[in-house]
Amino acid sequence: MKKNIGINVEVPKKTCNDKNCPFHGSISLRGRRLEGKVIKINLNKGAVIEWHRQIYLSKYERYEKRRSRIHTHKPDCIDLKLGDIVTAVETRPIAKTKSFIIIEVNK
Image 1 (cartoon, one colour):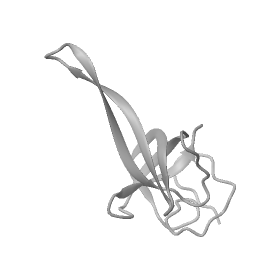
Image 2 (cartoon, rainbow, N blue to C red):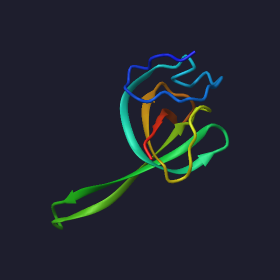
Image 3 (cartoon, one colour):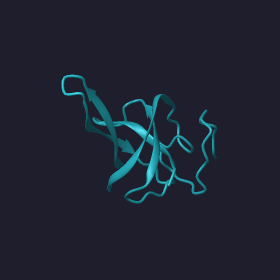
Image 4 (cartoon, rainbow, N blue to C red):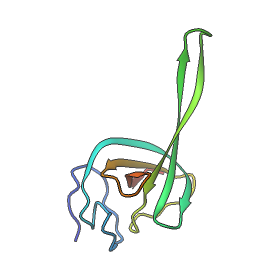
């Protein structure tokens, strides 16, 4: 059974029995929507996403590179590889450091 998650994304073709899947489970989405690169895939349905940004330092009149990383939940129905560009949406806390779920692979 696939459900409407309220965001215009392509629904995965695979099915899963993950209760924390926004398409096949009972978890709801809310809050921020981020896009980043997958730098690590964990065995326990997790992945780490990273994105870069530039901050202007007025004292030196230059830009500084910074990066942000978040731990996300990867449902079984979404296939990922290292280096993929993905979209993650905030949800209730799933684990101590996981508050985001991957909903789409943008390749």
